Every structure is written in C-alpha cells, then in structure tokens.
Length: 300
Image 1 (cartoon, one colour):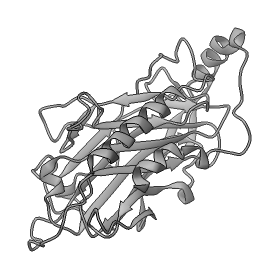
Image 2 (cartoon, one colour):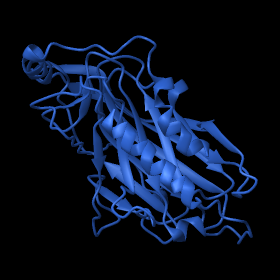
Image 3 (cartoon, helix red, strand yellow):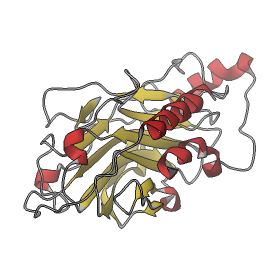
C-alpha cells in the first residue's frame, strides 16, 4: 500500500543535489559554533490547544478511540551533540507513555499500538531525513544548517481507533524557529480513501486548512531577540475513515529550521452517529513491508 511504499520513497522529497558532507575533523567544531549562534529559544507551546478545548475537536485527549502523540524534546542516536548525521543514518525519536492526558507534549502518547507482528516495533516515531546534517541542539531541538531538513511522523493506531466512527479529524500542531515550513510539502501520506483493504484507494493529501497559532520573539542565543523568529501553526485534515497508520510529512523552506515542538491529535466528534464501515486493517504482508521500510530508513 502506498502509505508503506511512501516510506521507502522518502528520497523524492529530498533535493536533487547530493547532501553536503562535512569533513569529520571539523564536524564537532561547526556543531559547537552553530549551537551557540542559532536561536536557542525553547519553551512550552504558546498557542497549542487540546481537542476538548478546540473548535476542530469534539473529543477528550486520551479518550478511547482517539490518538495523540507529542514531542518537545528531541533525542537522537547517535547523539549529534558529539557527532552528526553526515553519514546516511536518519535519527529516530521514540515516545514513552505518561499517565496524564493533559501533560505538555514531552514524550507523550495515547491511542497508539505496537505492531501485532513485530514485537517492539515503534508505535510512534519521528524519522529525520537521512544525510541532511540534522543534529540535536543544547535546547533539545532538531536543527540543520547545511541542508533543508525534513521529517516523517509515523503513528500506528490502536484497535479502539481503528473501530471508531468517521469522519476523522487529524490535527497537526507544530512550533519552529528559523526557516519557515514549506506548506507545499505538508502532507498526510498514504490515506485509504475507500475504507476497505480489498478496494483500497490510497492518496497523499495536502492539508484542508492552516491556522497561525502564534508568532513571537526568539532568543538568538547571545542575549538578543529575533522578531517573529518563533512560529506555531495548526494544520487540519478531515478524512472519511479511520486508518491503521498515519504518516505526516513536513519539510522546511530552506536550511536552518529548528524543530521545537509538535503535537498530533486524531479523533472524531463524540456526537457523531455510528457508521457501519470496513476498517482498513493492515494485512500481515503490509505490516512486514512497513517494518522493513522503517528499518531501511533508519539504516540509510
């Protein structure tokens, strides 16, 4: 299915130019200088909202049938404070469960489920584009000064969500510094529009609407302020059927975008009338393809 195939085709989002490779002798020095010079501002989201408090919502975050994952601390392996990904390895961040559905997005998730076939397969992760010089800053952001950064966020929905009613709202909130987001590259990847496996109709969907949640000052890391240096946006999609997996692709307009925080809420209005439909479950072979594709992305 195209949701799975798209993970192996991530290169189509990359520039035709080869990624910049930096002499390893200077990588640590460049990363140190950049971490001092780039905007160091990192904070809790200003404009992010939860579905129960939003016009786009109608459900309680963490309730049965809903999906949520959020990050405002980004890790990596290997840790690019001491190395970087000029090698073709993409960084992967996982999340761990917290007890409170109201927690600030810091390694938090609800309504996602590990693969029933591959034990330990990540149920919520962010895949950084390989070979783009993306590294972790001192404020736990992801940043690249040498290439245009891009990311894929992948969530595997649990059974309660797969059996829920449509229409489904996908809300993607993101906060960044530096270079802005390329709206032409913000897509919900591999959505099954047919709602069945046998008659599947997969498509990559641009967002239905975008809202600016906040624009404000950002610190330049040297005591100064950058006007309109920090931005928060909300992207919304409405689809007819719940999906087994969700993938959102984002890309910056250019280099020097710092990824500060993001949150994804997926659900349906609780007042929706029950709808009989066939849930687009992933067959066993498709789950295998997904696992292999993600492993290859992480090892590129």
